Picture 1 (tube, rainbow, N blue to C red):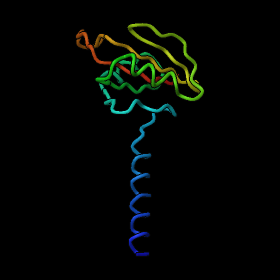
Picture 2 (picture 1 turned 90 degrees about the vertical axis):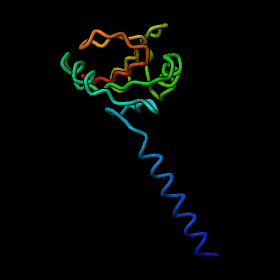
Picture 3 (picture 1 turned 90 degrees about the horizontal axis):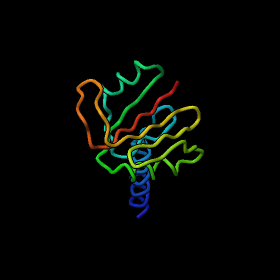
Length: 118
């Protein structure tokens, strides 16, 4: 019985560790769960100055805004039907939907999350 309990506790500890490790951060800002890294948009945004990380989510803009507006210490700069801007510890978080890919000119209807540290 003791072996079973120890094995169970070890497994639970490993699962919790993996869950915490999967919570990706960029410049100390949590990346929205399930958002996918966009290397091309990140490179474009970084060219404008600063360090950047851009991510895309299939979730609605409203859902992503709700997530970032609840982060501890976040300052809400602006929210609207098409985008939002937040500041957290000197990092700017910009959300857009729809948004235009500056490289291809294509209009995208998913949600773009840009995390930029100047």
